[in-house]
Image (cartoon, rainbow, N blue to C red):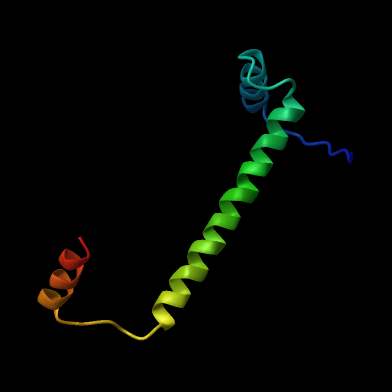
Length: 77
C-alpha cells in the first residue's frame, strides 16, 4: 500500500481521532481512506447524474400541454 503524509490543523486531527475512538474506524488512516472512498463515490454519482441530465436535455421534447401531460401521468397510475 502506498503512503502519504498529510499535515492538518490540530482540531481536524482531534476530530479524526475522536471518530476512531468511537469505534467506527480502526485507525485514523482507515478513517481517511473512508473519506476518500466516499468522495470518489460522490463524484461518480455526480458524473452519472450529469450524464443523465445531458441525455435528457438532448432528447426530443415530450408533450408541452400540461393538461395532457397530467392526464398521461394519471393514466399510468
